[in-house]
Amino acid sequence: MRCPICADEYPWPDDPVISLFDEENDAYQLVDVSTATPEKQADLARRGYRECPNPSGDTPQHYLPATYVDYLAPLVIGLVGAPASGKTHLLTAMIRQAYMGGLRAHRITTAALDFRRHADFRSRYIDRFEKGDALPGTETGVVEAADILLLRGPGGERPVTFFDVAGEDLQSTAALNRSSRFLVGANAVIFVYAPEDPLETKEAAAPTENRSFDLAVERLQGRPAGTDRLPVTVAVTKSDRLRYVAPADRWLRRGDEHMVDATRIRAESRDVFSYLHHIGAGASLGPFETFKRCTLHFVSASGGDAIPVGGRGNLDKHFARGVRPIRVLEPLVSILAMTGMITGPEASKVGLP
Ligand SMILES: Nc1nc2c(ncn2[C@@H]2O[C@H](COP(=O)(O)OP(=O)(O)O)[C@@H](O)[C@H]2O)c(=O)[nH]1
Ligand SMILES: [Mg+2]
Ligand SMILES: [Zn+2]
Image (tube, rainbow, N blue to C red; front, side, top):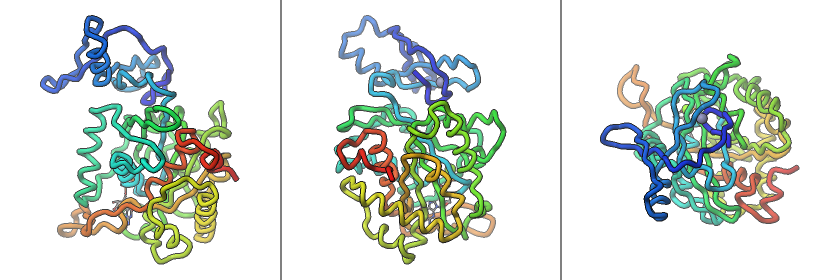
């Protein structure tokens, strides 16, 4: 069993003592469930946690859902991209839509596996996003997963953990930067690229290089399993800015897809590839050139630009006309197809040349 938070491996305990979070005292309490009825035990386990022993002692105290190992091998999905490239907005739009039943067409249902983590993610990100507030920048040094979901579908029941850390941490070459450690245990990666960023206060990545992509690719390549079995996807986000630009326009107009069609996904990937090549962002094609299974997609988390609110010096931004995500589930659907969560002859061809 590998902990998705600290990436340590350790034997999962099978003792009947689990931790329950006590809201009143704002602390975990150890509870022995051995005398409870089986029904009650199952319910407590579903709401309970186990503290990770973190054998290498390098990560602050953390807990995993007590049922984390009761399902198929967990899927750990990491987001990689430059600061302000749109990772957090994309992840928020994606998880929100999955919760709203957006994967139903693929016969997949979504539930929270870690209720506390999800409540936190909802109040900090999803609720604000729905109100049209631009989301806060991700703090550097975050090592925790953003959310842990339980997906149930034709490929079985599987916990899915998402990691979203600050772009600055992804660009850090410090070998011991703990924030990008999730890459060690990731089973899939969403590389996030934003075309021209005229509105960003932070310096946009020069298209001639993409340091967060390069460092992540390098690090993933160095893993024992190499690049053969790691499915990746490149999401060109903020594509609302390309609404009238071919070939993005054609894909954006399609909206959400309702089935997996490997040929269509290949055609979209080819269009994104040409687009990136054409604008001189060839450096962002590293994941495609390195990994065996890769798809590329045009997406938009918000559907439009956020407008600064208040006077000068105020960095808060607001999506005045609300948010309208476009095709945000496509990168996730591709990953679910490439990892066997979505099954069938089409799914098995996704991401292959
Ligand atoms: N037009 C447009 N702007 C976006 C979109 N997603 C994010 N943004 C803007 O890009 C900024 C950075 O986004 P954020 O998700 O925080 O980037 P991160 O640093 O990669 O997590 C935000 O302030 C948003 O205003 C999008 O889909 N379209
Ligand atoms: Mg962020
Ligand atoms: Zn751990």
